[in-house]
Image (tube, rainbow, N blue to C red; front, side):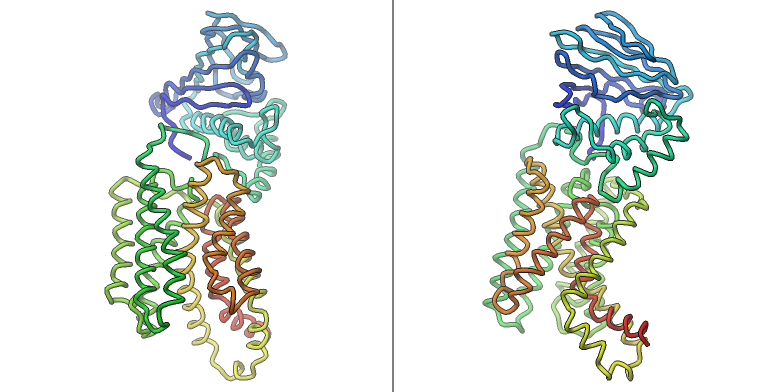
Amino acid sequence: MKKITAGMWIENPVMGQRSMLLKMPAETDGRYFEMEYVCKPFTGRNAIPLHYHPTYTEHFQILSGKARYILGKKELTASPGDELIFPPKINHIHPWSDSDQELRVHLISEANPPDMVGLNANINTAVTLFGLARDGKVGKDGVPNILQQAVSGRSILPGACPAGLSIRSARVILGFLAQIGYLAGYLKTNPSTVNSKPINKSHQQIAWLILVLLLCLRIPFTITIIYFLPIENQIGGAIYETSTYFLIAALIWWERDQLLDFHIDTSALLIIITLRPFQTLILNYWKVDSPLAFPKPFGLTLWGISIGLSLLLWQSGFKLTRISFQSLGWLALGIAAGICVSIGENAKTFASMISDTHISSTPLLPVFYSTSLNLVYHLGFAPINEEPLFRGFLWGYLRQSKWHESSIWIFQAVIFTFAHVYFARQFPLMFWVYIPGAALIFGLLAWRSRSIAPALLAHGLINGSVYLLVVITFRILS
């Protein structure tokens, strides 16, 4: 989610409410935040559900229009100039419009003792609800489904609590439902929630230009190399690899303030920055005559791009976010998906290698080491070229263009499949079944986890795990 700052308007189109943050908790040492909100005539009733604050006092001033509000068990009215105080531990609903005029309200939410984390969590959750409404992810009453409510509600405890629940019971009930919500892909904050600044057209145009260049490299350029260059000519492939990595790094730096909008979190960023150059060392270790092997010029170029991106991010003040248990769960799911698809896709190879009597006489430790290295190589190969492109930046820019995410999910699978058209004649089953199926799986993982990291792992395992899986299976069976 983009950074929330004072002076920013946010809007809930379903509830007919817009709000501007006037002062952030960081400006008051966590003592309070200040905002102004506007409700269209006869709207705003369910913008924020019935709740209470254990330690917060909320001060409302009606600037214009007539209002209704709930405090305790009473539904009351207020007029311009009225000042309302909502004390701690009392159920309430903020004032909403009760006339044919817009309602304008000034709000100060005061924490005693100061609570920087809690006040920020309240702001983030309110802003997220607004964003979900704008994205069409709430009902006609403006309320999201129960799992999203649980995820959002759990994130603001104990600063705010749903009416009718104690803090302890809310932690248990919302905590249980929130874990289900996390696994289903619901987030505490919605990446598309806030328009923190007007759209910069030049920024957007440059971003789309880089994205189009990436697509041109992946589809027409790659197809041309495969069909028209002799297989022993590896320069074309090296140009594709280094150019793609450079453009991906450029987009990461270009969108460094909002990488989560493009499904690039800490896990994904670390994989992209580290595994691509490490692949050149593997080629050198294997003594492969490849232009990408370290320390040949193309290999050194990959290292330069990786180190350069790291230094630029560090210099810009970019900070990695913590990898949560939820993220680790999605990474595990990506690994499981990759293993299952790899076994299914390579079932005949898998079965024939397991039954091969020569394996029993082969020392397993060197084979295990070699096949593990092969898997790492594949993790740094096609996944890093394709996941940031198809499930990262393409997805994010289409979402910014107001595409529905289910449409993006299908579209990226179609484009990804077309990018592998060179398999159509020789491997029709792979082209028509496995590749689009894998694209849908990768897209689903990125969509629900809001990270391409699980898809990176699944993609790498599908491409490079079959030999390692054979070794592991043989060891178990023996």
